[in-house]
Image (cartoon, rainbow, N blue to C red; front, side):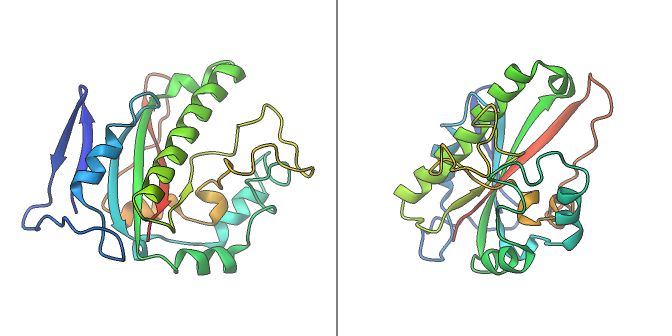
Length: 214
């Protein structure tokens, strides 16, 4: 698969050795390098750096992921984009298997950003969220009518979620990757991607989003 990344403001392509470029479009025929380049040109404010197309059969789904949402996360049963407000494991797994191709979006931040004020941290999260959903919408306009985003982290569009009352942004909300019972680390390993744990404030950590494409 081809990997496109932004380096010092320029789009750089790193094709797999021995692989042929695939310029076909839509209808279960993949996604073109040209379209990926245009999408990368749109993401310049949130820290997203790479878009990698991959086969959905590389996605790992597991019960324990949902368990960690329920026990250990303060967003459980408080947010419209987190369990139990979203489909259960059986249904999310069935939804994922209706797709064959997905996009992995990769960004990076400094670990010290964890310690920003809530308002500043939330602003960065919302910026990334909207950028991912913006890419999803661009893909829809390109003919990928099944495209749907799985984002990084619980929804932060509102300072305080209205759950269980009606959502203020039903057209904008998207489920986090883990809330969809996806084992992100296992999926990254399947793709040959190493994601080290950031342990100190000077470390850089990676964050991810997935767009189920077709």
